[in-house]
Image (tube, rainbow, N blue to C red):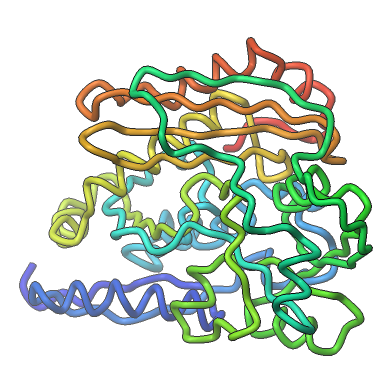
Length: 341
């Protein structure tokens, strides 16, 4: 199919276009020509309703999936954390790009040292010096924040996962909703009375918009597959699939698979406060995950690891473990959780 120009579907936001352009450039490295096709998603059109009230499964990917299945485009580029754990029939994962930062950032106002002291953000909830066979599960109903400073802050985010983790740590704070693309959200922070807002580090860094007044939230576990980019195509399109394989990153693919399997095992959608992170360390795949109540008052967490060649089912194992050790009670109490499909 020499001379074929692949059509890459993308949302119109600056970040989405950056991601699609990266894929276009990667294709060009192997001599495959491509062009961008801009498509609006439901999540881009309605910027007022909180995501968890919109029936959000696939809200940022559905329009692109339709365009792909109808033949309007040949491949679509997604922020992987937005992709439902079960792809629509007829659509295939063609590649996962090497992951950028998985971390969440607090973009704040005011003095850095005062903010850091007030939040006690240097505390790290997770101990990385774990044994390979270590398994940790517990359910807590108190804040993990031992800092005695009770300064009341107003923080903004549209993510129910971030809200729940923040309220678990800082139950005396107020959380407001924040919607829009990255540029819009940064502007709203400047114009508002909020003390700060939470963003994905990768999204800001990819388009060189990370402010100096930002702090990495090392204690906050990310959304499954946060920081990763997925490319999808039609399952019968061998040309497009093969064209994408040279930039497929196997390490990122296995880590994000485990994280998304964990999400699926918990029957979690975007309206469920579920977090998960898998990392490769010394030939072991180490997974950390949690589920919280929406108000942040209850949390169940799990940590376990396996050798990489035995880790394919680690996400499901972690999900089963956390459900058995208190996560089921939390999950059953969350409205509109549902399957992430």
